[in-house]
Amino acid sequence: MQKYRVIFHVDLNAFFASCEEARDPSLRGRPLGIGPSSERGILTTANYEARKYGVNSAMPVSEAKRLCPELKIVPVDFALYNEYSETFFDYLSQYTEQLEPASIDEAYLDMTDDLEDQHPKTLAKRMQDELWSRHRLPVSVGIGPNPFLAKMASDLKKPFGITILRKRDVQEKLWPLPIDRLHGIGSKTVPNLRLIGIDTIGDLATFPEVEKLRKFLGNQTEPFMNKARGEDDRRIDPARKDRHQSIGKSKTYEGFLHEHDEMLEALKSLTRRVSERLKEHELAARTLTVQLRTSDYENRSRSVTLEQHTNHFYELFEEVERLFEELHGTEAVHLLGVSTSKLTSQSGLVRQLDIFEASAEEKDEGTLERVLKSINRHYGKDVLKRGVNDE
Image 1 (cartoon, rainbow, N blue to C red):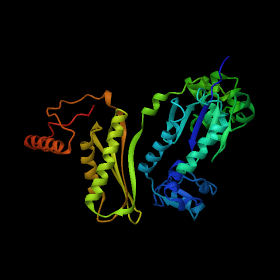
Image 2: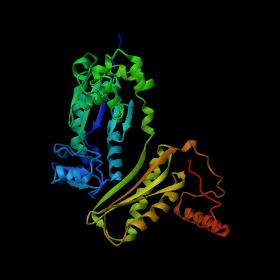
Image 3: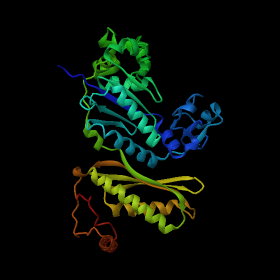
């Protein structure tokens, strides 16, 4: 007997705003926008309270405040969002190994063999309740026989929605929706489709002139028409969970950090954890970002792109320390964060010749750094560099 696939799409609702509300519960229930405070700035996103006023992502701050004078603007904090994203995926991974991240705040899970006689909706409700009670992360869950229908299902009810979408529901629930609601259709394509009479998902599913449609959708014509009919044979790819877009770590210090040395020690600990996580996933980073929040809640960040990818703690911390010195004045610190991006597989990098065998101990590392710097100063340029640590 054929076993029907059961795919979950779990989507964090208003993710950046939800992270800020989880960190600071006083923000919950208030209209909240994430982005720069400048009137000329552009919002990254907004919570659902703000959306009730017509505020949305990619909107100028000035326009958002005109629509909602009570709007609270909070600056973007990628270190925080990366931390909550890691928590989210760690939680989901306890249910199945067949997990595929779709972005920083959404994932597909193939639950076909992992339901253990539970009704899919019962398990979805458990996930939703636990993510909220443990981490204050609101999610919507879509359930379907393939990834496309699961994704469309989760979009049908937000926030805190749980929706099952079967193939037999497609004509009734999907076909009446505007064509711009079809997942994957770009905003520049929609006007062209409307010009040829395709206003709804149903119009696309039943459009008779395939060659005319191909002028606008190219080799994606058949795949989009199939999706509009509820068909999607794509399999969940668990390998994607190792292809991170960024890895970071941040920490909030309730009593504040006052001494410069203790701030550096805290950054050293954060950097070591980031280095460990990069190595765990066999990744190396080229862009490094340091973030801090002062005791009066001013957020600051600075980034650098390195000459080569690395996951080596001492190479990372050398740049972290330099960036921190540029950012910090004399203020007490409420939060520190270190994050890396522009990641690549460590196995794909060519290891440069390493003349010296370095000990894992910091004392020996310091000696090695001094020797390298001495040689480079002698020649007046960087003739020796570390390679990526591939232990």
